[in-house]
Length: 168
Image 1 (cartoon, rainbow, N blue to C red):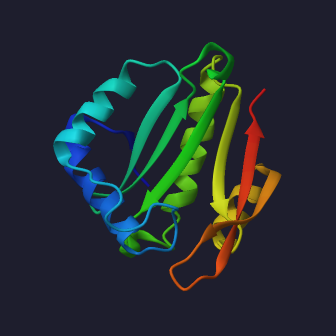
Image 2 (cartoon, helix red, strand yellow):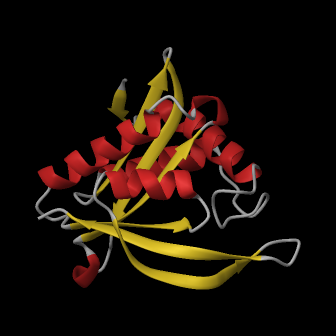
């Protein structure tokens, strides 16, 4: 499955995918309407990340179209540069095709190619069992759990898992 580094030409697709996933109001802490993203904003973001040695964005393509992306950003401060935070977004129609795993494997390979990045970290809702199983399958472990960290519109709460993988 084609996994490529994101380019400026991918900015509109990245913005649309991110907005679509957030609009589902299920997978990320950001609620619909809280993140305003535009192709122009994503182009500037991609440009800024391309200048950093500890950050990367990969896109997944299906039938020639961008249907998902992974962003991995190392810290800006000296004491945090070695830790990169990971997020993966897949359009609804692209789920179940193995693209999430392909993106994750590519990010892990990229991290292992960059000495500056020693640790990949992420946060995931504890009830997102499909994602948690994938992360564990590829070597991530739970470093912590924040109980009842997020409150839903209906008043229920969700736990946040902190997961990480050491690359060295």
